[in-house]
Image 1 (cartoon, rainbow, N blue to C red):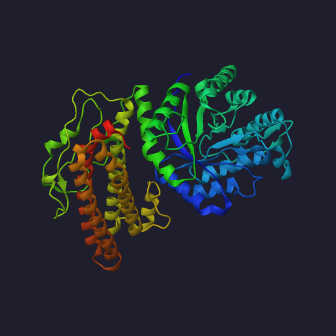
Image 2 (tube, one colour; image 1 turned 135 degrees about the vertical axis):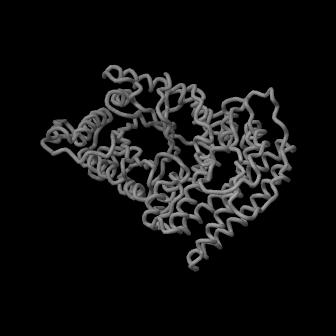
Length: 528
């Protein structure tokens, strides 16, 4: 089966444990903060230890701003389709079009019957699901007449349709057996299995069944998005599926996209470290490998970030260093972001001329797509830091000059990755400082020791980068002090601006230096 070219999506599959409600919501927020696309929650209304999924998704949607939400999958026997349709449409409207509908025929019929639901067999469940989809789509279709579905299991006769969702909500079916796969191909917008029940060797036949049913219904097989709930471990040799280093995950998932058409991967884990690693190490690799496999070149790092210029005035104290060209390796196809030489502050915290350089790359070396992805990974992380630094500088400038009130700033921040529920300039700046510190700590504790062991020639560069991490930490503490001055003194805005200028100078210079020296070694040696 060919790759259908769907946009890649990545998300989480969370367990709605009632005793850990704050943790569940925090994991949903983390999903958004690390840049994933989708938060999903299992739906077992007969399970007394679980929170109600639809209520939880509503809270998650209200606690986030960009991430999509979906049940994974909704238990239709315990959620009447007309009511479910209106619940979905309502939350989609309230969230600005961020709801999708994972839907299932039901299982565990004894448990369903114990809480008042119907006791059906598997065949009846599939038939009831088909009727339910018809009801749901009819309720959303506000341009026609009343809803009239005279089904054996779901009869809705004469109800007024509406409200309509804010966007075309996808109906994604959890399906495994032949009749459910046929139903998916005929009626659904997506297929949402789990790798625990739909193993790799079963996917080709399952996909073929969906394709055949879609074609028989006059649809293109590519109309049905293929999603995949996945679980695994970042330990192991990498021989088994998703049991090994992050780059192995990336290779395996990219291969599934290119050969089986899977285009959305949803991580079933309640471990925040797994979620962070999935977002930071696996997702960029999958995107890079899939783009390479599809024959696309992709935008340059500078095009993606839009942040090489901090969008503020300044003078060049060093010019554009010709040494920056050194970091570009044509065979690698990854361009480090150059230092434009612009400095805003009156002081410098280090002497850039004393920075050591690492070994020259081998001009005859060839790099695999996975190696290129490892090199690009560092640039991608830095692009995110540069972009948000640019945005926070703009917000600080506008708020401190009175051009934007805090309420307007809050509305803008809700579209950004790093956000706070109760916004002030201080809390947002502090959030950014924590993100930078976390990034540096991960490098100091994991990445840098790996590079030292793998290529001792990199030791001087790694030592210097760690020294600069300490210097940037001191600059971040200066931002903290400036925040105190900002809220406590009439002229505190001057100190805050000066601190932000120094942070901008040091951080952008450091990021460019690190990319110049480490992009090629990361491609050659890997991230771990």
